[in-house]
View 1 (spheres, rainbow, N blue to C red):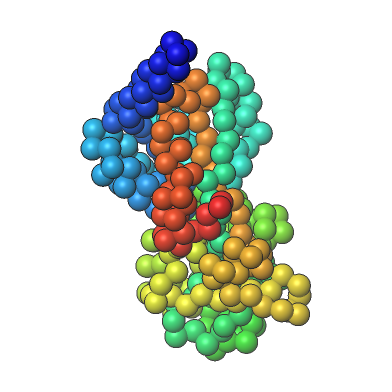
View 2: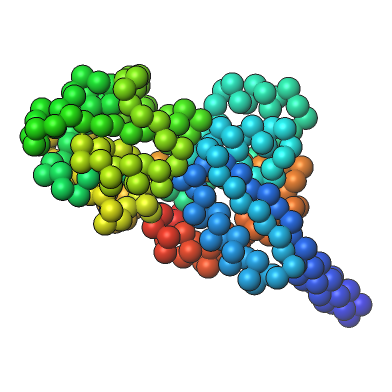
Length: 277
């Protein structure tokens, strides 16, 4: 009987401790602009549920987030690529032991000006455009006019993933213009008739036109949609990561549990990303 009473008291105590912990959660999250909408929305709804919680979310790019995690100015680094070996070596030089979690998945969409008649591109054509071998829209079945290509800045995980996946590792041409966010690429492409860029699936809107792509040399083309990405039919898809110092687990656990809960996973889906579950 005494054991049962003690067990009940322990459960009540743990429940109270958990609730108290959540109310006092204070976190800094920094990094990828592609992951930014997920973190911002999750932080907003978490703080609505626990008004005493304080969560600050800022972008800057995957590299910026990892650098902040290494120097201790953020609790969670959000990235759209896996941590690099060079970054792992810097972490090994500290006492930190980093935990990696995949919080969802994303797809990269090629977008052009809405008036552009081109509707699809092969991977080889995409590589030709961003490496400078293809310079006009006529070369890919479009109207006369020069191509103006936009990419993300070099600190972005999206920049590196696109280079590896769509350019087959080839270097970007020096005429490709670097921009610091998905929003900046949308704005530039929407205002440039010859523009082309790549953005996260959640950023697709009527301001630009998304293209179907082929990664089997033109045998089949796939549009960047939620269902195609979820079913792994769309080829330019990738996981999204959270990294944190394992010594800070008790500080981040409540927010991580919230993100992995049915509520958090639905939130990820509603924003336009692919949840884990």
